[in-house]
Amino acid sequence: MAGPVSWVAPTAGTPVRAEVRLPGSKSMTARALVLSALAAGPSTLRYPLRARDTELMAAGLAGMGAGVDSGDDRLWAVRPGPLAGPAHVDVGLSGTVMRFVPPVAGLADGPVSFDGDPRARQRPLGPIVEALRALGVRIDSAPSGGLPLTVHGAGGVTGGEVTIDASASSQFVSGLLLAAAAFDKGIVVRHVGPPVPSAPHLRMTARMLRAAGATVDDATPDVWTVEPGALAGRDWDIEPDLSGAVPFLAAALVTGGRVTVPGLPRESLQPGDRLCELLTAMGGECVLTDKGLTVTGTGVVHGLNADLSDVSELTPTIAALAALADSPSRLTGVEHIRGHETDRIAALARELIALGADVTELRDGLEVRPARLHGGEFETYQDHRMAHAAAVVGLAVPDVRLSDVSCTSKTMPEFPELWASIVEGTH
Ligand SMILES: O=C(O)C1=C[C@@H](OP(=O)(O)O)[C@@H](O)[C@H](O)C1
Ligand SMILES: C=C(OP(=O)(O)O)C(=O)O
Figure 1 (tube, protein in one colour):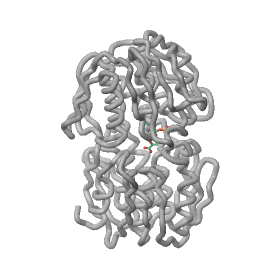
Figure 2 (cartoon, rainbow, N blue to C red):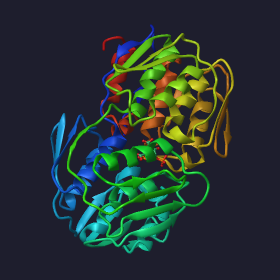
Figure 3 (cartoon, rainbow, N blue to C red):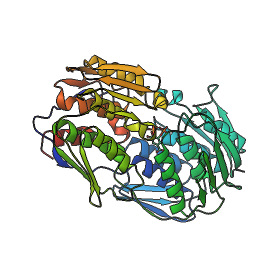
Figure 4 (cartoon, helix red, strand yellow):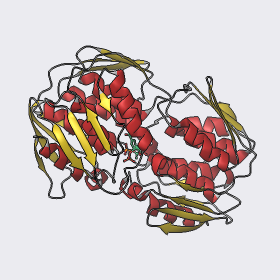
């Protein structure tokens, strides 16, 4: 990776009015790649996300023998092949790669090693490693239970019933389910522990598995069943990335403008309705039609009291909006984001306070009260969504200086240019 790129967030002189075509959903691209690599026939991904996380996912699967042709930005082709080690998977800082690929590696014939960025070694992984062991997969892991690790694939996985505490990440459950149709006995996953976050991502997993022909039962809370059986190759239409859209939609709120993200289907696999609910509560008008999602703002942002556990990856941008709001906010239910790309609760509190915000760090979230903000250094901690948060504050506060904006390449390499173009009205 290239070195850090410092960046001064552009301040909006006029209301932001734009239609912003955003790249494909990271979560859908990751799932489509895994399901396609395990399918009986070829697949395509239309409008996938090309970014660090999804390129690492493609490379990890290709290293085990899947044919992934990502030469065309608009259409990636996946030809499943026999999966085999020895292979090495670089997970980067990607939660989806580090949780979705080890179960696939259990199906490969031979050893597959995994490692990633220094921070990836600190992200929670132990519960899915333990679950895979209980399902019959041999794994050598670091003493912490996480990276670096080697999955000794035996060409198949017995599967069956397994209990897991997935409160640290929904991706533990998604990772097990995505590979489970190829397990001899399929899988029954039971979660025991504090609530599993990110429910919409679990629904996305179930819906995409069904779209590939799997029989999935997710009707009982905290229990998921996937029957063994062949997955079909298919053409996947990848939706625009809603999580990546949020800072752009937030720009409408902050500047009293209007931003449309076209291409989001009404029956989206992503939680558009929930996002609308949150942005409406913060003072925007949000309309979700067949044409896409449009947010109109007044330039006045209201505080928000919300449990964000189902949409926790939106916390950084929501916290940035809260710092610009005219009333207090209390954002809760997101303790597990301390295990995201950085400890997002601590990082948001520290960096927003450095810009003059009045913030209290809670165990599971943040309280933010109105205060007069000023410019200053904003550390991004290799976290794309910290960069989004800083960019949103920078709309209204001159001279917000990000230590590094290149971290946005994790999910949207074009972020700095696209952001500058919509803020400066050249889009
Ligand atoms: O399955 C997925 O694609 C994701 C699930 C969520 O993970 P957590 O449940 O770990 O928050 C989310 O935050 C992440 O960005 C993507
Ligand atoms: C938490 C996130 O990513 P990951 O898939 O690496 O967990 C995120 O994108 O906000």
